Amino acid sequence: MKSNIILSNRLEVASSLVDTSPCIDVGSDHGLLALFLENKGYKVYASENKIGPYNRLVNNLKENFSSITPLFIDGILKMPDDIKCIIILGMGGDTIYKILSEGRNRLNQIESIIIEPQSNFKMPISFLYENGFENIDSKLIYEKHYYPILKYVKGQDKIDDKFKYIALNYGFDLVRKRDSQLRVYLEIELEKLNNIEKLYELDSEKKNKKNEILNFLNSW
Image (cartoon, rainbow, N blue to C red; front, side, top):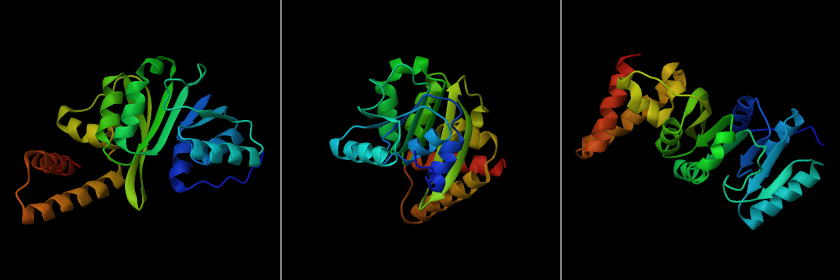
């Protein structure tokens, strides 16, 4: 097993949230995160759902003399029974939601879930909140855009109702700990909304978003 696996900041942050195995890295790409976790002593499965990416994954695992099990599966419905940690990174929030909702019957066996939605954050965050998972750790990182990396375990998130909108859109843990990067991100979002408002009247959804962001920032 080669040991010189270098991760991007995004993958390194995600790896720091892993504390149990076996894990499945869904949509593993070249398997770098899976290889890094294997080096740390975790049992890992790496999956892809298209033949081209799957073949590249298999070849890279072989080149690194890895014992990671590659899986040619779509989502988590057919994942192995021993998996305790699900990792889904680098996908749109709607895709992460689809994977989790289609595989919801497999979530009973899961101890932790780590997600990194790159758009539409609310869909997977709301799904996990409504299905008995608590956001216990998180980090908002910047790689050309801002992305939340969120860790969940079984439990029930609680937060002041007046901040629930923000929590469901950006992550309960980031809101609870008043993450400094979250403030920067929300200020950018607010500026975008203000610029739109200079040209057009905001629709009800955007007005609500602006008001919720303002209320949250004013509570800092």
